Amino acid sequence: MSDAGRGRDALALQAWREYFEGSRLLENELERRLKDAADMDLGEFNILLVLDEAEGSRMRMGDLARALAFAPGRLTYRVAALEEEGLVRREQSPADRRGTEAVLTDAGRRRLRKARPIHARHVDELFLAELDHEAVEVLHRVFGPLRTTLLRRQAAAADPGQPASA
Image (cartoon, rainbow, N blue to C red; front, side, top):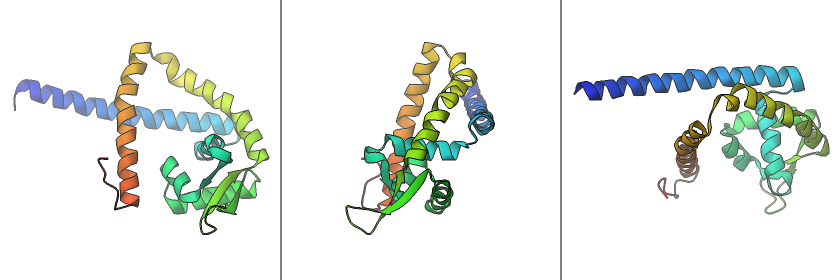
């Protein structure tokens, strides 16, 4: 391997570690701040957010798990806890009566409405404020396609008849 190849590999490894460690540190700090300010963790926030953005503020549990990158058992546990708080309810799917849907309640919508600007401010303070337009464009170019590819692979794994590269 050439010196240039080793240098790129070293730079790639350094970039990976900075991304991985930096994103963990960011997530931990966002989690701490959201919990302190809104008595909600990021998992709860994201469940409420995705449901709020879904048509009719409801989603099949499997679709919600995929959208959140949660294991189905983990999502069931989290939704049950939110249901106990009255923020979400589970209902049979009106489309086929076999599936279960998570539905955002009015209380869940109010809780999200309170937490959303707090979380947005934290994201801005800890992450976006440090980035110029060019850095944001780079992140979009890197993570947009990465997210699309990983979601496609996840869907293909859930439905083996679906091609991963489609």
